[in-house]
Amino acid sequence: MANRASRVVAVMVLLVLILSGTAFARGEQEARVPRVELQYIAWDLGTPAWSWFEDRFAEFEEMNPHVSIRTSGIPASDYRTVIMQQVLSGDAPDLVPIFSDQLLVLQPLGYLEPLDRFLENSELNDRLLPVVRHVAEIDGSVYAVLRALPPWMLHANMRILNEAGIQEPPSTLEEFYAAAKAVKENTDAWGYVGWLDSANVHDYTRTVLAWFVGFGGHFTSEPGKLAVNQQANVDALTWLRRFKNEGLMPMGIAEGESYDLFVEEKAAMMVVGTWLAGMVMDRNPSSYRELKVVSVPMPARGSLTGGGWLGIPAASRNKDLAWQLIEHMYSSENQVKWVQQSGRLGSTTDLPSDEWIAANAPFLHEMKMIGEQYVDALGYDPIGFEAHSAEFKREIMPYLVEAMETTRPVRAILDEAQAHLVRWAESKGIPQ
Image 1 (spheres, rainbow, N blue to C red):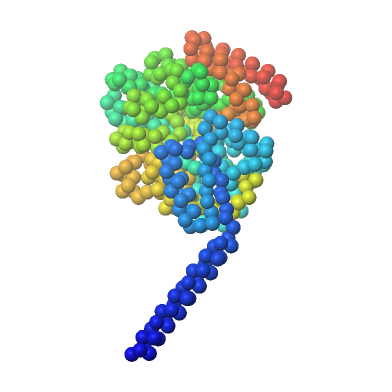
Image 2: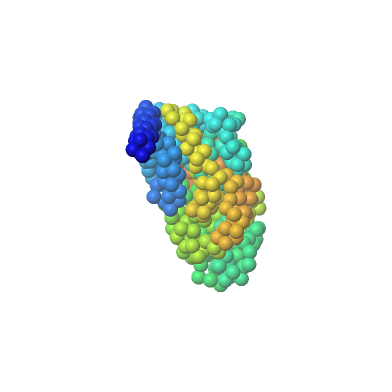
C-alpha cells in the first residue's frame, strides 16, 4: 500500500514537472517574440460606431499577445492636413483611414501600399463590395478597402412622409419635389435638408455637387477640364433654388445641424452617405425603424462617393501584421456585427439574417443594391484639381451663393463662374 502511494506521488510530481517545464518553455518562447505596436489613427474616436473598432482591436490583441494597438484621434477638420504632413515627413502609422477624395491625392505620392499581394491570397477578396474596385483600384492596383458603404442616397423618414400623405420614398425628381411640398403643407417638418451654410465652403459645395452629380454633371467634364456651366449643372442649381424659394428646405444649415434636424424628425428627406442611418439608430431608434433609402431621385441618379476607406501606408514597418488586423476586422462574423452595431452596411457583402433585417432594418437590402450600382463621383473635389481643391471651392463659392440668393438666371451666373475659373486654372498652369 505504501509502495502504491509512493508511486502515485511520484507520478504526480512528474506531471507537475512536465507541466511546469511546458509552461516555462511557452513563456520563454513568448518572451522571445518581439513586442509590436500597431499604430492606428482615425477621425471618429468616441463616436457610437467606435465601440466596434475597440472590440475588434481587443480581440486581435488577445489573439496576438505580442501585439498592442495604439489609437490616435485627429479631428476630421484637421485630418487631411495631418496626413499631408506625414507624406512630407515620411512618417506614417500602420493603418490609416482616409476620406474618398484623399485616394486620388495620396496614391500618386506613393503614400499608400498596394493591397494586391494581400488580396490575391485572401478569401476577403471574394466578399468585398464591387465599389472597392470601382473606386480604390488605381492604375490596376487596389490601394484601400472600405470602412463602410460610401455612396450617397436619399434617406427618407417614412413617418413624416406618411403623415404628409406620401406612401413611398420618391423615385423621380418630380416625386421628390411633390413629396417635399406635401411635407411642408401637411406637417411641421422640412421636406428636405442639405448643408447650405454660406459660412462653410466645404459643406455648401458638397451639397451643390451632390445635385450636380444627381443631374449628370460635375465641376469638370473630364479630369482637369472645367465644365461648371454645363447644362446639367444649370438644371440642378435651378431646381435647388426652387426648393429654397418655395420654403421646402432650410438655409444657413451646417452639416451637424442638418443631421440634428433629420434625426429629431424635423426634416423628412436628406441626400447623404449611409452614416446618417447609423446616427438615427444611435440617437432615435424608433425613427430608425421608419427609415427607407432609395437611389438619388434626380434625372441621372448619380451618386457622390464619400465616406471612409482603410489603407496601409507604404512607410509602415508592420504591413503583414496590419493586413492580418484588416482580415480580422473584415471577417464575415465581424462585418455582420458592424451592421448590427453601426446601423449601416459595412465593407463586404455580409449581412445579418433576413429575420434580423426584417425586425430591425428592412432597408438594408436596398442600401446594398444602391451601393453596388450607383457610384459616379469619387470624393467632393473637382476631378483633376484635387491638389487645388480648397482654393477652387473658395473661387466658385460666391457664384453658387449668388445663384441661390438672387433671381439672376442660373445660366448667366454659371457662365461667369466658368470664365473666372478658366482664368484661375490657367494661372495654376492647368490649360483649358
